[in-house]
Image (tube, rainbow, N blue to C red):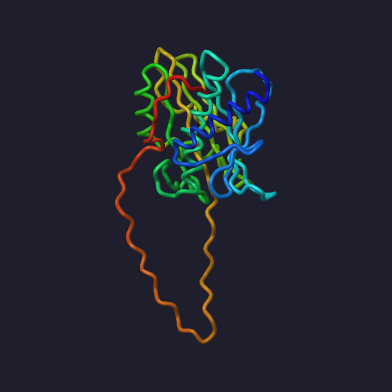
Amino acid sequence: MRPEERLAVIQRCVVREMAGLGQVFRVDGEVVRGPGTTAVAVREHPGGDGGGHVDLGFVLHLGRADAPVVWDCAAGLGKTEEEKLANAVKMWATTTASVLVELADGRGVYADRADHAELPGWHVLQGPAAVFGFGNERLAAWLAEHRVLPALAPALLPGLTGADPVGVKLFLGGKAGDDVAEVRVDGEVSEAASAALRALDWPRGERLCWARLFVLLTAVRPVGPAVVPAGAGAPAPVRTPAPAAVRPRGLFARWREARRAGR
């Protein structure tokens, strides 16, 4: 498949998958434009192996020179290259695009919001975990009950400098004796975080099973003191309602099965 044909297939799949997230996107040259200033850019995967790899960048403010772009790569399985690309985009939409949509939408429909004391200065947006392979219920249940990101915080924090937002992708699974654990921060492998993920006691079975997860970290904005005009009285105290009781949950209580998609 020629590069221009691959681009056309990927863009069509992005339009379809974003529609599934309630977003109207349309192809506009080299990008796929969405609501407001959002867009999805496509770049050729390094190596150009003709397989099912896609590199997609979610643009938050199209047209701004300093606009943040959240890049992520995904891979899909299938009998044809088009099927592989379609499954790769579906995997990206399930785990990554859902988080970016929630960032703009803010209704708690497509991802969960959480703050962790182990990650001071950062808000966390956590998307669904895509768990696929044999016996995936065990791995899905483990992810739902364990606080994975706080456990990785000591290894992640030293690398969280400069960029905002920061995309963190986790890929783990395999089988007993042949497992894989990889953490990418803004697309780059973090060896320390990957080692910390591998050290966790997620279930390794006798048959292959994997999980793919994506988390977006946004910097906490400091709130300055209110400015009181000269001669004005002291501002009335603001009553803050007590937080509602929330049942403790693991980081990835949301999960979706994806048998034919990949990393």
